[in-house]
Image (cartoon, rainbow, N blue to C red; front, side, top):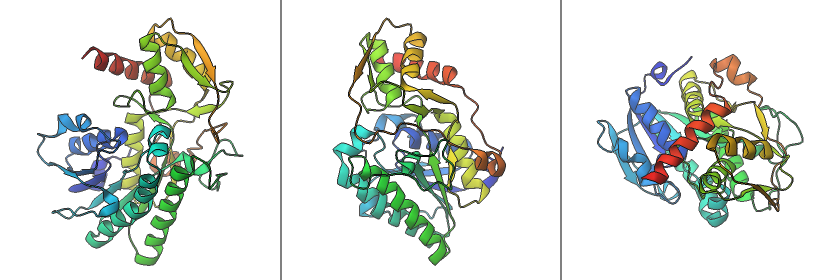
Length: 320
């Protein structure tokens, strides 16, 4: 499998590196021998995600809003743009910030990469497919997105980021890649970020009812964070432009997920049904043929193992 070492990166800039996926990505790059400059304004990321890295040789933290500029002292050879609110609770609370990060922030990250001759990778999302009318979703599918709905601030920010990244590659010759991430989960998620896995885990460990929206038959495809990170680094090292789906094609309903988490947590929680949010996708499942063929990548951690690790982390964090 392609790894970060295959790219021989000396210095990577990770925007949003204090976030859930970003912090795991920073750690993986450092472990592969790449120096890392993390840029984050901590509007949604958490400083404690980076605590284990602060004293590591080669790690630099810059607190800044990438939409207002992106200056680093040392030229990178890899720029990974992960800055953005990603959970519904965050982007609904920070709609303008989300749009500005996806537009101005992406522009600034692209300009840094172009100026320094670095490889640029945009963290896009399965949300560009909206509430899809095709299942599973492959990269040729254009999506079904409400451009003025409540989720549009995130969906359209990412769609614009993809368009800008593509235009920069075509017009300026910038070396770019786009990955579309599907429902990543694992340690360091925030219990109140509004996404299903941390919400269900938090509720199950507290003995509270698990709040399943609608009838619970809507599906998601859960990809453990270690698998997501390995897919991201494989795309960066390969040199492909993408977009390429990075996710786990094992589809699960929200009701099945709730029951599985109750079982794995050893919880006595019940399930309570609540109203389903506007424009909530009915299905979500990646076609990863392209990632398998081009990157020789596919997820290795199944839902039971990944959720058990996640529950253990939440339990240990609560104990502390």
